[in-house]
Amino acid sequence: MDLGEGLRKAIAKLSGATIIDAKTIREFNKELQRALISSDVELALVTSFTKEIENAALKDKLPAGISPKEYITNMVYEKLVQLMGEDYVPEIKPKRILLMGIYGSGKTTTAGKLAKYYQDRGLGAGVICCDVSRPAAYEQLETVAKQAGVGFFGMKGTSDVKEIVKKGIEEFRSKKVIICDSSGRSGMDGVMINELREINKAFVPDEKFLVINADIGQVAGRQAREFGVAVGIDGVIVTKMDGSGRGGGALSAVNESGAKVAFIGTGEKLADIELYDSKKFVGRLLGMPDIESLINKVNEAAKSVGVKEISDVNELNFDMFYQQLKAMSKMGPMKNVLGMMGLADVPKEMVEGGESKLKVYESIIGSMTKEERNDEKLVREQGRIRRIAKGSGRTEKEVRGLLSDFNRMKKLAGLMKNDRAFKKNFSKFSGMK
Ligand code: GDP
Ligand code: MG
Image (cartoon, rainbow, N blue to C red):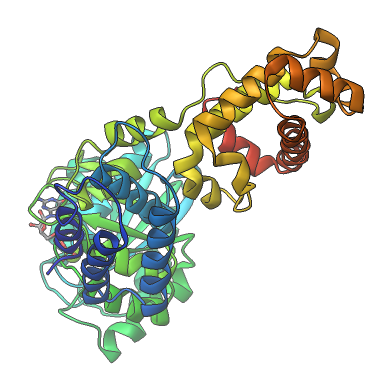
């Protein structure tokens, strides 16, 4: 079973579920674990992956307007993106690229596609044929290069890859991007490993890509390991995404090598190459081509309205506090997302209590004078606490509770301010500018 199929099966378990309870999550996680394990995903990763989902899913209430299936799919999506990478942005600069992979994975085709990709962006490109194991390899790459309008270099009648690379680099002195196509065989063997090592030494690639076919599934993990041990892998290229395969093997390859997916092959023609895009790729893996609209929907549910960013902690006043609290109570169920962004310790009491607490605070703040709303220190005076409590029909204890939450928020805002990465994510996530 391909990973995507397993994931979709797990998600299908949630169809019809109206609440997220321990039993639903356990059943879902069992499927999820099965899918990940059968795709050779490391056991430790499987455990942490499913544990995190369980914790997050059980901790919080479901946001209004979202089904358990949508909510958990979004969660799995977020986790997969964390693992697979968000997107790939190639540097448009002179470089040497080595393509590796087993026979038929799409290396030669990809060599032509990549050469054209860079040449179209102003970097003259050339391809070197280092596939010395297949007689027709030379002609195939030569044809591809001609179609792409890029340089071609190869040497017939020799299997000395070192020599080929050396001469190729000389030939392509004026080229900015040089791509080396290697032998593929049906599996790794000693000869192939030696050949790759020699190419690696002579070519000194800036980027080493493992090319895998979208329908290979779990064996991708083993391939990544073997090629990784031989010469190392900087990135993965998944070809034939236009076919029936969904690229599930990429997860195993990425997990095994630590390299991210870079390009996607979407057809036999030279123009059929795309940059890896997490929404498209992971969405497809999950069997949800419109994952973007789901993410938007979930984010929308958590989005805050009219919240102003606190640029100076000392500026925080009760009006802003109320707005923030309102936003946070909406985000409550999304705490897992906050956790992922590095803020695991949002005070629980602040996001709990929801609507009823908001009402209490609203009335208390409504009984404050303008000066009091802008100066929290004033409110600490016992006489004012008594007056505000009376005016709002609340207890003094509730007024003190508001004060302590206010100060907690102040502390939190201070923490947020000092963590740029968190702040960036938080702004993006909450819709605050
Ligand atoms: P190599 O043995 O790794 O060099 O693989 P090739 O580049 O020769 O490709 C093997 C076959 O897969 C060829 O028939 C290609 O046309 C085909 N191919 C390569 N990439 C893609 C792709 O992204 N989509 C489709 N549909 N076919 C592809
Ligand atoms: Mg080839």
